[in-house]
Image 1 (cartoon, rainbow, N blue to C red):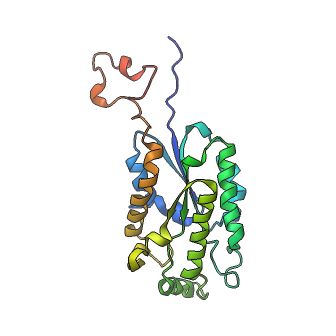
Image 2: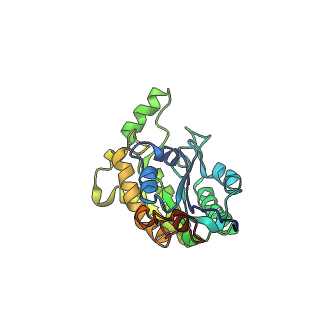
Image 3: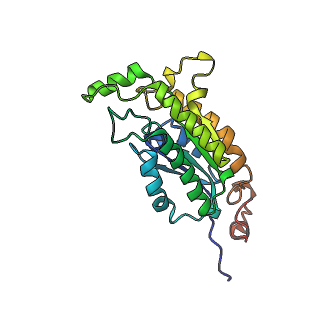
Length: 243
């Protein structure tokens, strides 16, 4: 009997800070995307709580080192919520605006060197900040308000700029969540991180960009109704394990 080829699941890699790390929580946006892509690819959570784009740029090669670029269907890069922290109140996480833009460009270039083209990369700009609610969170930790929505907006604009320069898609949450003056506060659980409604919003809008990357992916292994019950090996061990 000839050696059988392994079944290789393509990957969608979610790379970001805590908003990405928490995306696999119940009703999270990452979970919703993974559910949509069941039997087509693996959705891999590489969210790193508290990280900024400077640290992300450093660890990206380590995270992607064992990944076959040819098997990657898409990568999201979602930083900015920590980069935009005010320098005088949160110097550990703060990253200057120009460096933030440069870091995003660098990460897109790094992915390109691994065989992941720009049309498979989606940059995600940070969501708006609900200052009164986040200030309460800061006070509980014994600190003062360390972020401002207007400053977060500058970083979101920088993310959009980086996407234009790199030729990648950008999901501008900061703008979308405040479109037409809508109240965005229900999209956030603590003023910074996403609520269930916010995750639903992200999943819906991200899918609109992600769908074209994953549309060509076939259904992996035969549908159960197509398996020959009298000779299942004929169906399940065929050279092409997808339908």
